Length: 119
Image 1 (cartoon, rainbow, N blue to C red):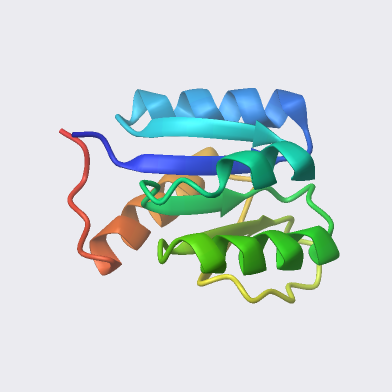
Image 2: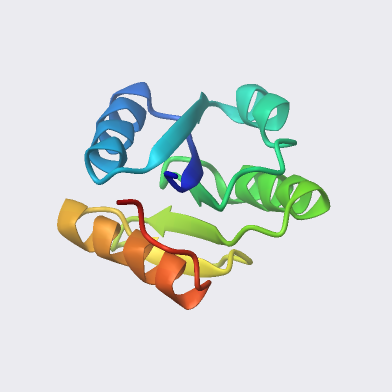
């Protein structure tokens, strides 16, 4: 059974690209474009990881994290650009400019959470 990820972004092109990248690795990905759509789908307790894109403003990230925490205990990965000052309350933080490193971060989170990788 594939691990279920909710990926939230404010940039549609990046949302599509990262979703494809994750799906190619065997993950089941639900994507949400923008705050309202993310709030509508985040109540699903079946997600095993939440990923917040780098284009989401910090205040919106904080709001989404608070909502996710009310509905689910899944780990949260927040993506940032290398030149940004990272200030986050997510469980994990990664830089968003390297697809290979992004996938490595996701895999590492599942290992740390003792969630088996997709077959």
